[in-house]
Image 1 (cartoon, rainbow, N blue to C red):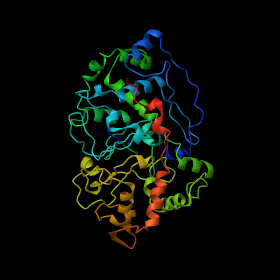
Image 2: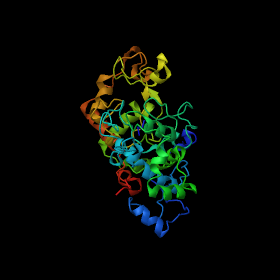
Image 3: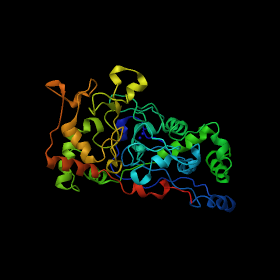
Image 4: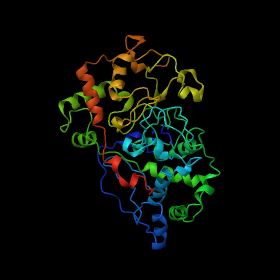
Length: 385
């Protein structure tokens, strides 16, 4: 599944600052001894249902169905979702990499390379599109979508695209329910999630959405800093001088697109001057609008140090290379975002011309966005034996 990575209400209601607070009380459905014996034959699941709900120190959190998320977890790691049983959603979205891939182009079910780099899924809960299929807003009130060209408006839709893509998973959605029904653990998991054991394409993608919507990553060093200081624009007492310098550089030069508090990007899509002629037209390839040629999703930066390589085509192997692009490598393009043009000479690209110390500081700050706890959460891990 591509993440092309992430449904709150309005973005102003989404200010989340730090860590997951105490888990909410929910009803737990326990398995019978017979049911659990069936599950244990193939899966490492607890004898009750994992808790997937969470609360945020600021902002609203979604209501997650624990039984649907549990089903979604199994589906996410099941290679049977691909035509020849070789790849799963997790093949391109690895938990230890914040649910991204370490390849410039991921490898599909038949050995082919995907068109674009896999966007990270960790954590889509910090994105506004996750919760209600796109009925929320960022910046000027426009919806945030998924994929580099934002053609998917929910994880539900994104899952269908990935499962049926002829390179990624190559599966006919109409045939998938019958295929999964041959596994006895699915009869139990669907019944627990939906009240009956019927397996349908709609339920499969809904369960995947429920699981992915439970991803929340708010335990980074940056989160601890903003919890103490309440605003990202002041020096954090838990940061080193180098990290605070990098944060200041980020707030001045990068936050206008990527956002200050790491809850939502401030901008949906943009051209960032990678080259003059793009083989991949991005958003324009979907809309056929000249003013959208070469525009791509502005990615979420939580856990960015784990999600190399970078850009839609994975051209940059390191954060240092990304920073160098903005320092000295921005190319002029007809649709280059105005913020990346020289204010007094808009026919020329703006370049930050950072010193080596500033480049290192900016990279150091980006490392403070890593949430190591998130990458090790058992409830998000592969449940198959």
